[in-house]
Length: 112
Length: 116
Image 1 (cartoon, helix red, strand yellow):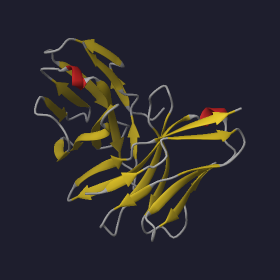
Image 2: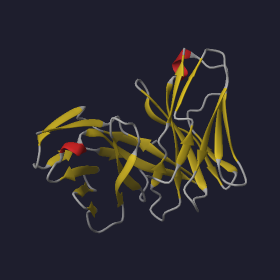
Image 3: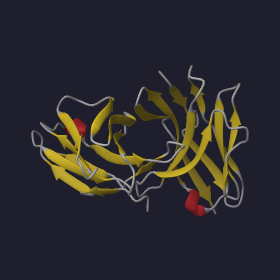
């Protein structure tokens, strides 16, 4: 158990809909990262937050947005969903001096 | 931009034998960190081992060790005494930092199958 929690574990929704993925980092970790894993793109970095502030953006679509709240949990919002958004979405947190990231169990999103 | 290359899509090993998973990287930063993660069929990503660019010795964590060859820009993962539970996808990753931002760049992974 990495100490990072993600909900829900599975999500099935229709095209055009909006969903929210939730993540709680390990106790004490201030950084939260979101990654998308798909068969064709592999593991792709989406966005990083540090103590409530956005620090880095990767290959995140404009239809996607995220935020980190004062209690350090984070949410990833995906809107106007398309079939190609079906993927495993990971949240990770870090706080160690080596910068290693600990991943949550992931949310498997299926868009039908 | 940094890049990670894992050239072995799949590897097979007999139980109790050692196996090496290859990883080469490309970066112009003098300071960097390399990581290996394991992803079993259940899907979670498990941190295995870390190697810093300035570390004098190769990293080891139990049955996992890193064969770090800085001049060749390679960071191969060695798993000794393979177990059936080692069957999984293995990803090599590099930490990319810029200002206060940080992210991991992953290779495409190697699928390891341990045969009894």
